[in-house]
Length: 398
Ligand SMILES: Nc1ncnc2c1ncn2[C@@H]1O[C@H](COP(=O)(O)OP(=O)(O)O)[C@@H](O)[C@H]1O
Ligand SMILES: [Mg+2]
Image 1 (spheres, protein in one colour):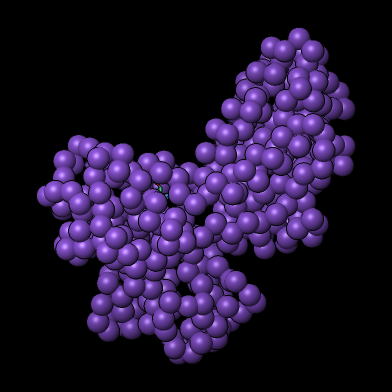
Image 2 (image 1 turned 60 degrees about the horizontal axis):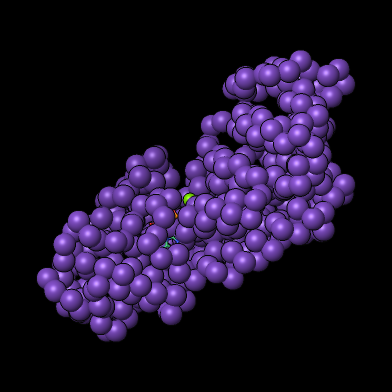
């Protein structure tokens, strides 16, 4: 089929041609954000799930949904090496400048910008990466303690007051939230708690790896009461089918049912894999309908493309010991595995492997579903590890 018209979109954060199976959660978030704007209680949501399940594109869609309802939104991604205050400061500045255009909210927004000035100049001492334009002088005593937790609470409170005066809600959409360092996470949660106690229309909708839930609970034990943590997972068969069939149909191309079932089987319904298989099946097929044989012929290429894009980037960042740890896990099966079993298979003690395991968790490669268990954060990673480290040579790594 014409590669120029290929509708599928494999790639981190690439919007899919059909966002399948997510309408219920979109609706739920939309209702909550509109309640928030009215000052009604509404728990916020933290989307959690493995890599490649579609958290980023869902978060982006929710943001568009919110904008369409007249809600003021900000999009932030927490990278591994920047502080949360540094990410928040410019985003909050833009939000306040935007709100200040509304006459009824102008004074509140200016007070917010003064809070931001105090916040940024005092916290720059501890967070050197804060860089933000300052439009107003600080107001003494406003968000200028120099201590993140009270200052962030005071700042977000001002933003909430400005939002309320403007008749809007401010929603920060934060991706990769699991990378936020614990103290900064604690400050964020406590600031949101303050806003919710005062029924201010400001919240965060977040997304992150499955460890996010535990990390937020460790930062503040009451996090579970403030947020829900819906799990974003693989698509159920009818939704996986829609993800493949609908985009083709829009291009006037049919996909046979037995081709769809083979794709569903090979991908286990994981969105990233569905896009990759859809793309290669399309390129392989010579005419409509795309049939099972096309899918069979496309599978090697789909796997190779996944290895190069989705899996490989993660693998290349690992130390030899980390590779050996993951390869040992793969040898034991898809997981989760008891950490003790992994250590035993490596003929090491669990405690001597502690730093390796911690390194893998902070790189976002593995997580701990329950105490003492270890699981991959990337679906089907065990199979990839066996492909990239075949044979027995890996056993000699140290
Ligand atoms: N609901 C969905 N239906 C079809 N494809 C999807 C869906 N969600 C995500 N995708 C596709 O999956 C891939 C990964 O999405 P992404 O949002 O980057 O995942 P994550 O942030 O969870 O790692 C992208 O190619 C995207 O187009
Ligand atoms: Mg993502």
